[in-house]
Length: 194
Image (cartoon, rainbow, N blue to C red; front, side):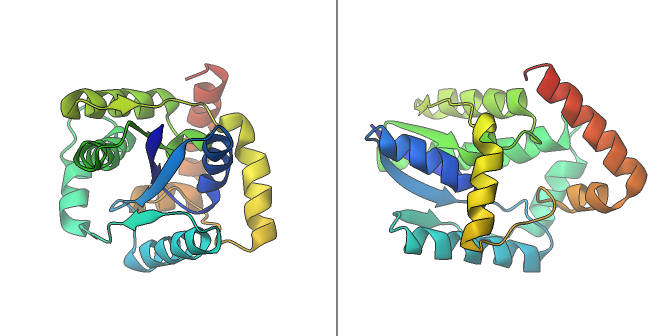
C-alpha cells in the first residue's frame, strides 16, 4: 500500500516508519506543520526532519508554509472546538488533500505516536478529512512505542522539542499551573483510552 505519512517531527517518525516499512508499505513522509511557533522553533523541527529523512533515505515532501497570522486566527476563532482539534484539522486536511492529489492509497500521521496528544480528536479530524477527499485514513495506535522511539531519537542526536508546537502549548509547558492542568488532562485522556 502507498501511504502518505504526515510527520509532526523527526522523533515521532521513527515508530511509524519502522512498522509501515516493515510491513512492506511504500511510504512518503510529509512535513506540514504551520502550527509550530515561534518561527525559530519551526525551522529547527523542519531541519531535523529533513536531516533524518535524508540520512534514512526516506522519500519526503516538505511544505514550508509558515502561516502564523491565519493559524493564530483559526486558534482564536475556534468557537467551542478545542485548539488542539483545530490544529489537527489544519494539518490532516492538507495531508488528505495531498493523498488524493498524489494518488496514494491512504494517509496516516505521526501524531498518533504521542500519548500527550488528544488521540480521539486526531482520529476524528483524520476521518473527516479522509471523507472530504475520498481517501482512506490508515489508523494505527503507536503510543506504546513512544518511549522506545524517543530513546532512539536521543541516541541518534535528533532535535527533541520540549512542547507540542503552538505558542499556547509552549506557555503550558513553562507555566506551572497550566502545566499541571495539562498533565492531568493528558493523564485522564490516556487512562480513558482515547
